[in-house]
Image 1 (cartoon, rainbow, N blue to C red):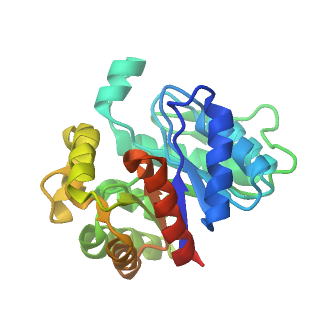
Image 2 (tube, rainbow, N blue to C red; image 1 turned 45 degrees about the vertical axis):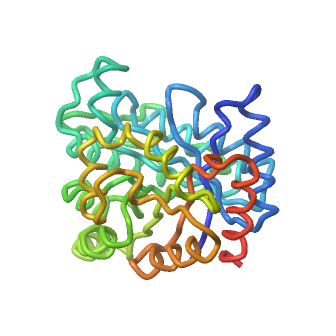
Length: 307
């Protein structure tokens, strides 16, 4: 099972330089992958391309670009460029997004998100695999009157979706290469998420999907203090139905209830539970919550588990 980390240096004086340094530390600790979230700040495919170029020991990925406010042609160009820059080590994650950020940020109605996801994936697959598209759907049109191939990118970019709801899981199993569930504990994975996406992939005649579980966690001795901080940090996600449902299916009430917080033995056991629940890869996020020392301690353990 591959183990990686989500890197966030948005609070640094120079985000790109700080991100590269974090990636070097992660690779030195033995982690295998680095992932980058997409906000209204730094462009995640560019960060992934830079890190993948500077730190060749790591696989790199985006988790995740919302399909609202983007177009398959531009996202394909970003993904293929990152794939070429990293010589095949880039993984593209997409997301439905949220009503709050879609309507509040872009001024776009958050309507028919799963239908948009299906059309986006269909057009994007054509572009990343063939460098051309002639897709005309209800919501998206993607045509290539000129070539859309990036030389050196190869044929295809792994497509993953931050899917957790039934419809999104069905679409991801049929059209993507895997999923990126976040705040979904082992119980939700084993009983709901993994069976649903696997069945959809089998029905579509596709290979077994990758299950890249994003886990909010850290190794620390100050469990109560850190959990209090995490409760505040993750409260935003409790307002988003898909995350709230994933937390509930995991047996939690608050988002922090599915965070992995404890000593080395506790965290290692939770990683094994994710593996047993069907996760093919585990990516830890939020490891800075206990400071640099907590991050290094966490990454040291994860590197040992990865090895």
